[in-house]
Length: 87
Image (cartoon, rainbow, N blue to C red; front, side, top):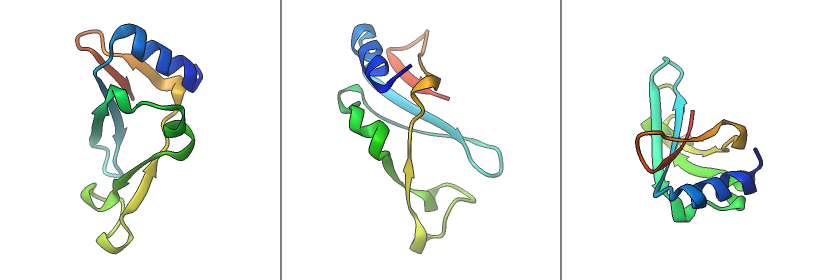
């Protein structure tokens, strides 16, 4: 799937929330969510900034600016909710 395909899927399925899931270094699930309206092609190229110090094992507070770059091939609609998610 391409970024355009993901955006089209989200719009066609009425995704209200986009949920990004990943595993931290100790192996625990982490995630953050954003409005489906914020899903753009630029997000796939530029990434999504987040505070890495809030995730155990990622970064110390003085080095905490991090980027998550979504892989469009892993996007899927949550079958039980109007969420587009990455795992």
